[in-house]
Image (cartoon, rainbow, N blue to C red; front, side):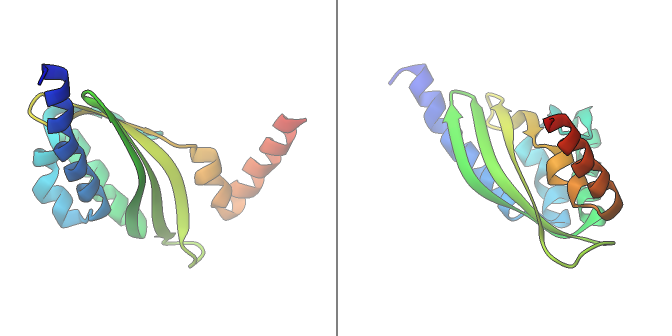
Amino acid sequence: MNDAVHKDLSYEADMRRVVLFFQTLTVASAQEQLAQIYTADAYFKDPFNEVRGLPAIMPLFVHMFTQVENPRFVVTTTVLQGDSAFMSWDFLFHMRRYANEEQCIRGATHFRFAPDGRVNFHRDYWDAAEELYEKLPVVGSFMRFLKRIARK
């Protein structure tokens, strides 16, 4: 078996571990397991944050639970090639100040694994304007207006 195939097989288990982490994420699991999922110097970027290292990543996961109620990820697709992986997901939650109905943000994450199988690169891709801002009462009206103007 050549090294490339062997690495792909070893990262499959790591990818399953990452998917399980996200699908069962809680404040406690983030605090307890983050160092098992991410390297100490991991890079993390989403539409609102760009940080490096566990001390900077941890508060982002904890903050999510203070901003919204009942947050959870449903992983819909995974793709693994070498040490890179993509995971598409639905992020489901309830907004604390607004509608009671469950909200959904659809997005994807690009991961890169370190040789030890932990994530050393995490980049989220999702449209904050469409998936979040348009759903807010006042801001949403303005965002939808801007979108109509841009289409003309």
